[in-house]
Length: 271
Image (cartoon, rainbow, N blue to C red; front, side, top):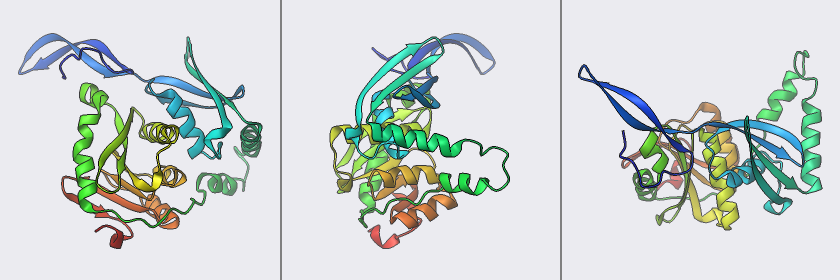
């Protein structure tokens, strides 16, 4: 268990526990990651409820809306209110009418799919959407290795709890870690990071994403939608993640640990 911090980060709380080691029991205070239901509400329309760490929720709202294609531009988001309720947290987004229309169309297209014979084809097509193409940028292995090695120092919640994932925006020229967001959900961490990067006005062509998790196809889709050309994960990608990365032109790196890594495509750009 980690030592008690002067002030724990948001989304972490103390829990009294009994520790058993070497046949002996003792009482201690442990730090655990908070996990709450977070509802994303667009112009009064509830779209999704996610289990998430209650921190950086404004970043989460923007990143989720962009990577899900609900917002085409950050300027379509007019305001965000984070409201505590007895059952969880509502993140209330005020969005442009075009975004509200997209949301209503998506909800209309989803209606009636459950249990109908051939509509599964449409449902699968909605899940696996063609990713946008990203620039064919290269990266030096040393830039990936140094960023991943530095990442633990930017994960205060993980250091305290051992229960959160991180997504990091790192300089593609080897300049190190620029932004990090943590969450109990790896997709949430990436959405928070993308939202934070867009709010900060960072140029995606100068950065790559590093993940402390495996790389699923959704993570590749979200990264390509953010205009980022390189995704490096400490664990393996899935087969569909490789397929989507190939379609987008995104360099996908797995098992990035120490100075080792595996390029799953476009190996000529890693060097």
